[in-house]
Image (tube, rainbow, N blue to C red; front, side, top):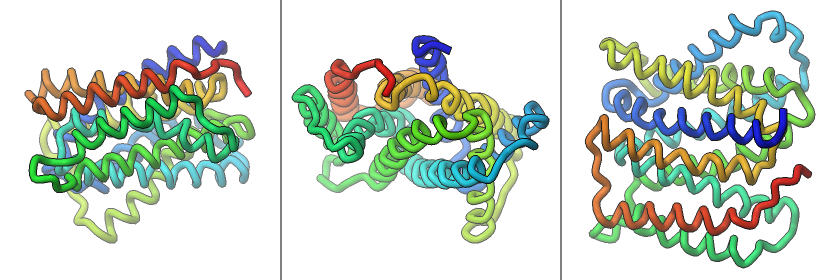
Length: 286
């Protein structure tokens, strides 16, 4: 697989994840958040086991260890995101989560110990300004739901960097599959400890769960692991910045969400900052 092909796959993954905010928003008011996470990843894991059973039985201890780590991160991401979406819109959640693209290069600075370019610095400043417009309400209080979505973005930046390293040491497909299994395990434990599990009752709820499980999880996270083996963490983060554009369009069409002038202005600044920061990224693998 070439880097260009890997990047196209990641762009397609980003499109499916844009739809995930719609599915989650439909579910979160009627089904407990951790139950949604457990069902989402549980169904995805079962489907992937059925498809790749012969390959799965060859998994080794190192792959399981790495899968447990990225699975824990995956669970933490959606733990924060699901609770965040209870108190914010799907489109706002999409734009806040897109700040992952600016957080990845910031975290890479500490890993590589290299100072950022001027364009990255400007990108960070502009994105931060946009975040202020999305996070701060008219009464100058921080919106809790928006803050939790930002926490999810930070955790996902760590997930991208860690995945980028692990796929160079173990089988990317197995890593992608077993991270779903471990995320299911952690979410299921949390569900029985902190919630009263409730199964979806309506057709819309089941369709949303299946959309999250099959498109956004089974396809999305497994393809992410495979494709990231052939591209850079920075490129992956940049391509994932397409996610909020899809989420905002779909939220407007299906949920009739309007972010308001302040929200759209903040979202525009975030996109501008992301584009400015990423124009200097090299595509050469290291």
